[in-house]
Structures are given as structure tokens and as C-alpha cells.
Length: 264
Image 1 (cartoon, rainbow, N blue to C red):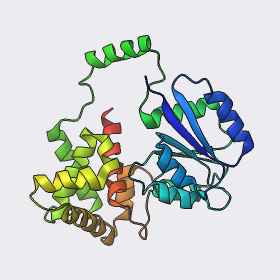
Image 2: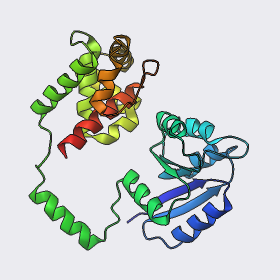
Image 3: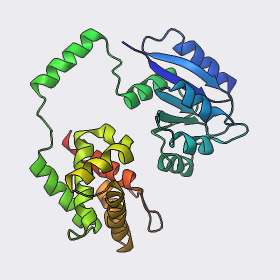
Image 4: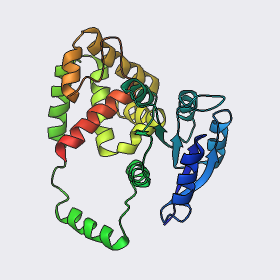
């Protein structure tokens, strides 16, 4: 089984030593590079093509937010785990909005690193024998909690009504289709411009750019109606305020995740 390729961008000697020792003989994760500052970090990541990047926000020459922004624009975007001593809600919120997949606060344990890396790469830390047992259970109870397409349509419609997206606008249909695709194939949200929009465009005989604009318009309509408390109530916590609109991908992922969690 091929190992998960990991790069660390961090100037903390303590952090790098811990990671080097932990991953040196790891069965499933390989530390392929350590980068000390932000200056040429993105280029080095691009050349190495890791599966996961462990990124500190406090770096010499270029800060972690600037690196994060550039990493999310790569053609092949790795899973990005922020690992930093900056722990306030503002730092977490900003990093997640910019495209980070997870936020770890230092000091973190070796077990924390393993757990988050496995979660983000959907790699099981179980042995082959344990995996076989889990697979047998999944095959026996595999239909429990799955979302039927009829049920899915009803629940998405209810969410749209709650947040204030009217059914007559074009973005309503495109947005509903995008959420259903993301539920069926979660990884598609990581290829929103290359796969998600083109797939929707093909189904509705239109262009990907029109799909993107129509979905953006649907989200803007909900925000302009000022039902922010309704929007936050859907997700069960204050995710947004009136001046802060989510990107298309954020909104699609939030709704899809909510439906998957409730059906688990």
C-alpha cells in the first residue's frame, strides 16, 4: 500500500524533530520534505506533489495565510492542515474560509497528527484484518442511513425555503444538483470548476460559467433577504453574519455535509 506523502512547512525545530522521529518508520505516512519558511514553499510543494501539507501560520519571509492562499490555487491541491499556536476563533475562521481542511492547535500529539491525516485522506489506520471486519459489517448494514434521492430533494428544498432561495431562479436548480452530486461523490467539491460546474452544465445544456454565476446569484439572493438567523439555524451555529457571504463551494459543502451527518 502506497504511503501518504506529507510535507511540513514550519520553522519550529521542536515540531520538525517530533515529526521526523514519528514518521521516520511510519507504516502509512512518509515525511518527504521539511520547509522552513514561506518564501518558496508553494513552488516546493508543487514540485513534490504531496498528499498532505502541515502548515504553520507564523513563518519567516511569507506568512502562512499567504502560503495557504497560493496552495489552494495549485492545479493539484493537497489536503492542508493548519498546525499553529495561534488559537483564537478569528484565526481558525479565517484559515478555514481560505481553504484549509483542518485546524490543529499546538502543542499537538503524534496521535493527533495521525488521526487528522487519516481523516483528511480517508485512509484507515486499521490493519488489513480489522479492515476486513469493518467491510463485512458495512456490507451487512450498508443501506442504513443512506439518503434516497426523493428524500434528498425534499430536504434540500426545505433548506432552500428556510434560507430564502426562491424556486423560480435558475440557480435554485443548479445549486440543488450541485449538493446532490457532492453527497454522491464528496471529492467532486475539490474540483468545482473542472468537474462540478461542467457536469451540471452538461445536464442542463448550458455553460459552466453560467452555472457558476447562477449559483452565486442564488446565494446572494438569500443573503440580501437578510435571513441570516435562518441560515445559521440550518447549520446549528452562527457560521455567517450579514456582511459575510460564503463562496459557492463553501455553501454547497456545508449543506452536503449537514445532510450526510444527519443521515449517518
